Length: 634
Image (tube, rainbow, N blue to C red):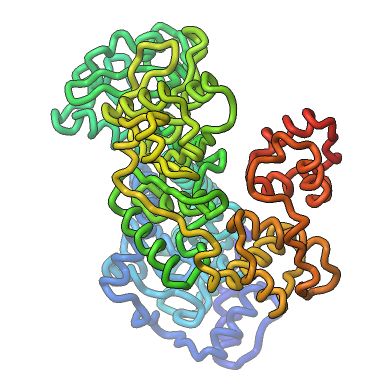
């Protein structure tokens, strides 16, 4: 609130009348009157300004550092006004919202040097009525005449304060104090203060926006560069700086890419300086230390301008990992989620934990349905590759030539080339289920790739480095298949360095009640239903069965019982073992067996896919084969 000029004599009489007689003149400004009453109630001295309420040197330095951007900007802004401040004997203060003086600019403040006033609290509790406390309390600019100051030694001049606000929040109070009574062009002073306020607010906004943009760029999973026409790197985000260090820029104490990228003139950067943008190109960067393959976008800063370009680049292996994670290619289970406290299974879990850490390829052997897939997830999760993707491929699905394309990738033409599962799994784990069904030629080719750690897509000559751990699963004895020349001896030698044999369910009957309870809880959570209780007689019935289909068969039995039992309890009569499809693949040949499973799953594709242990895509093929239609929404 910018006020009209007032008679100093009258204001002095109002002040004396209140401080000496306790009588408030009706002509006193309402905000000032209220502040005087509070100052008196708080017992603030009217004689001298109390500067004892101050921060320690260390506390002040820490606070000034936190507000350093505003302090230094205001110093630069006001430095050009030094002549104006000197002419009118003005002092400038920057105060925080705790009423602590962060910085005193130019002349002493009421005979206090900057060293004496900085760090002092100047709220109403400490110094009584001031333009600072009034501006902060009412969130408005306020001109306070000298005789209205609570402390008499401060009444020699006027003061004007204004809040510095950003996004509706007050960050500071900026105060101009007139150290003597003189003819002051009030309009000019007010305009100056409001201009400085606006400039500081805009600067703070710009800094916040800049920091937000920097945080976003540093959080981005790709490197960003601003490159000048002579090859100098004007800006790089966090990943960009790391990449520059990797290619030797820091080592050579140079920031010029022409000096470190040997094929610089043949990259899209050069096209960018000619005004041509490049989007998502696969680019090879050749340096003295290493050759890199990136997906790169280069955009000229301005159309038809060759002054600078912006480059956004991501290593292909990082992009594959990102895509793999975005597609959900991560471990769903940990070793701790595998239920079983018996000595047999506890020993298997302990071995799996050791194998997970040794980094070698792994072969999981055991009957169908013993939990090899879940074990593969657990080993990946417990390994140092847990941050990488977990890619799964069932070798028994599809024709042999399609399996080869799935593993190694395919180049349809020069412009269209697709990575295989090996490339997608680089940095992580490739789980090959039913590996015994992999054709000999594909297995031999895979063995060669695992030995050289380099792969080529079908139809291409370009070699790409990979770093993949294989976890293979086999229902039978893979060594016997090798002896009978039914499986690649070379690949078996690579993947059999660590072998884990999954026990059958009938060999660990003591774990069946715990497994059953866990399966029922998972079903309830998956379908957002209330969990059900397995009664003791039902547990006994499950424990006494031989389970040729192992855990997968137990899952199917309990799933049917869970969905077909009314109420919250599952008894022995609710367990229908005979009516459930067995875990073999007779359903692929026998329509009646498939129809039985289809009905048991209530026509739900997802439920049947889980029951049979196949993908939804595979299931749709057999639904079409047997002339069955999936229910809408299932």
